[in-house]
Length: 381
Image (cartoon, rainbow, N blue to C red; front, top):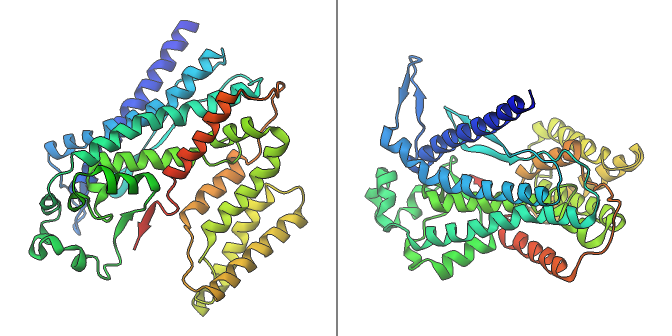
């Protein structure tokens, strides 16, 4: 019976991986071709827009992207197994809708089934994933930036740009109201300036998602940085906990979380809010702040005080510095951290200090976070 159960588990993990491979391939094909796989006509007929070859081209995106995610998760997995910690294989999370743009997956997770008994084990299991993923992401980005097609390649994706020539950027992004762009991080800027053989070859940031290796590399850095946030039981939380210990971490983690929410909410409310929308928008945002702070504070009074302080700070900054903006997309992740993942870290029975080598690796992980983090990863204009 146990052998049968094990086979079923392996089969399920393999099924999820194969399904994620299909969904990321479809998503990659859509981004590369700049059009969806399917559309629905006004007569409610479903029409397929992508050819078989265009769908297969999506593998140029899915294989490297899933490769980095797999390296990340198996970094955790093999380190946990090294310490004889019972752990599952990765659960890949497919995510694709036929009529909406997606990246094909929400990542992957593993489930640890045993208690972790030492700070060293928490640290090693936590840091192994980001390091493994980062090691794979760097050559992916290097290859992507050293094998860029000619600038005219964009005309095969957007034939409508051809009439403007290579100066299309000054024409096609003016007041479109429906443009998507990728943000910047320090590592991407480095590759653009020092690795790409010619700056002319580097795609406009509105078009980067059509270049599969660059898009896969960008998303790899995005997931790496998100996991390295020094909050709760994210990988970055495990690493910082290992560096500074239980007591100090659980004092600092809430501060990092508050700063994170403060940045994310910049520009949400202020004098610029239309008068007829102020009541519901202000009420909704205040309710959001209370919901995320209530879970991380010891009592209701402190949660209300934090909510009022944050709301007033955002209003005041919007008045003094009009146009200041954070990144509202992070508010969703903030809610997930507060209500589901948690921002505190459990103690380990063995709190022995880390070795010097591990401390160096820990601060190197902080450097990876700083190089990979995009304050506004996806821009919708």
